[in-house]
Length: 124
Length: 109
Image 1 (cartoon, rainbow over the protein chains, first blue to last red):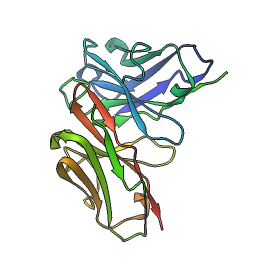
Image 2: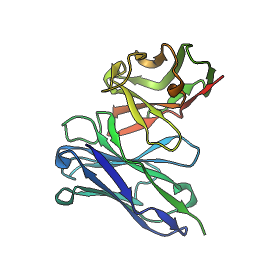
Image 3: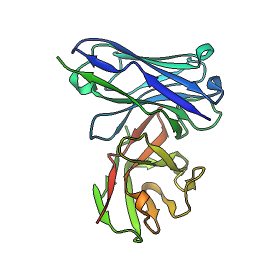
Image 4: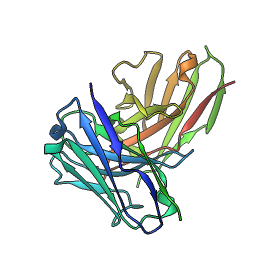
C-alpha cells in the first residue's frame, strides 16, 4: 500500500523557519518525482515545489522561490521542504504528492498519491 | 504562466442530476497535460481524470473529461451523494511548473 506521511508542521513566528518531512512507503521512491502542494485554510490548491527522482532537478513557485528548498533522501525514502523567512501568507496545509508514472520527473504527469497534509501556521 | 479559471464557483444540484464543470486556460495546453481532482472536507485531493479524458484507477465511469486547447470539461453523468465535493483542474506539463484552478464546489441543492 502506498503511503505518504507528512510531519514537521506547527506554529512559527513571522520570519522564522520550519522543515517539513514526508516519509513514503509502498513504492520505489527513487523512481518517482515528488512535489509539495499547499492549501490555505478554506482556499484552493497551490503548487509549491517539485523535485525529480535524483534531486538533480527542482522547481519552485514564484511565491516561495529563494525562501523554500525542496530536497530528498532516497536512502531514507523521505522528501523534505525547508521553509525560511516565513510570513502569514505561508499559513497552510502542506501536502506531499507523488508524480504518476516512472518518468522520474516532477512535472509532465499528474499527482496520483497524496499525503494527508501537515498544518503550518505563521503567527506572532 | 498559465492561469486556470474554473466555473462556476459553486454548483448546486440534486442527486441523480448531471454536473458539468468548466476549466479554462489563459493559453492553449496539450490535452495530455490536464487533470481533474476531487477533494472532500478534511481529505487530500484524489486524482480523477488525467490527460483530459482518462479515468484514474478506481474512478467510476459516471465521471468523464473532455476538451482541448483552452477549454476543458468534467462531467458527472448522474450525481451520487458521495460526489458532492470540491473539484480542481490542474495543468502539469508546461515550463517545469504546474498550476491549479481555484476550484468548483459541488453542493447538494
